[in-house]
Image 1 (tube, each protein chain N blue to C red):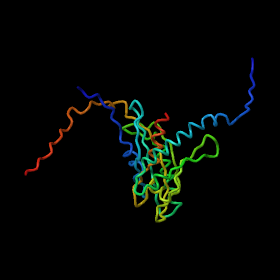
Image 2 (cartoon, chains in turn orange, cyan; image 1 turned 135 degrees about the vertical axis):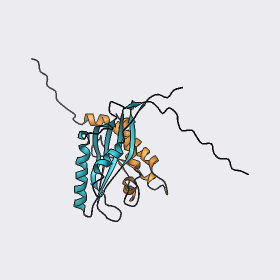
Image 3 (cartoon, each protein chain N blue to C red; image 1 turned 180 degrees about the vertical axis):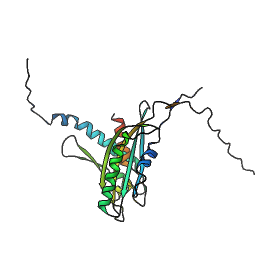
Image 4 (tube, each protein chain N blue to C red; image 1 turned 135 degrees about the horizontal axis):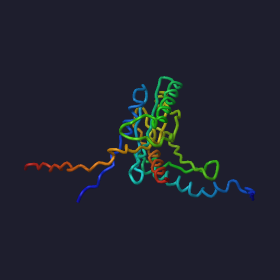
Length: 96
Length: 137
């Protein structure tokens, strides 16, 4: 029975190949989250960022606004608006 | 022109609450829901908050809820079928602004109706619109 031997010369190639699509997806999620964010001063809506992760196929959507977590997840005082959660939900449904 | 028959979707948000609503300190709500093509399956995105007087108690409560939700597919439900459950965030520590302990978790749960009774005719007649009352001069 014949056999073949393969040598992987670039283990990171698959992740580098999908990196542009991952980046585009993260940019779209950030744009949707911005559109979903309620605007009073516009500080939070304008603060979404896409940051490169530890490897090429990881992008992070972040928002450094101090109160963003309570707009996103709500609190005992306010309902959650979930601007990022709704953007991710949309992305998950479209990725199927 | 006739209206096509409809797929009647079960109320997942109420079903989740029926399972975890008896736990003191727990709240849940759906923040997004999407119909998956062609309409048989719906994806619901649910957030569950677990609050308690101490951090460890809140964490234990969140873990208890996580186990209940992950086993939803095994619980008989006359109104529908839970066909997919994925924790999408947490449970993670996010105290309230006043410092009160809270753990937050989010789940994607997909459901579809039972095979029987899922397809129903559209309402024979839609509620008639009331004509706006005219104001006298």
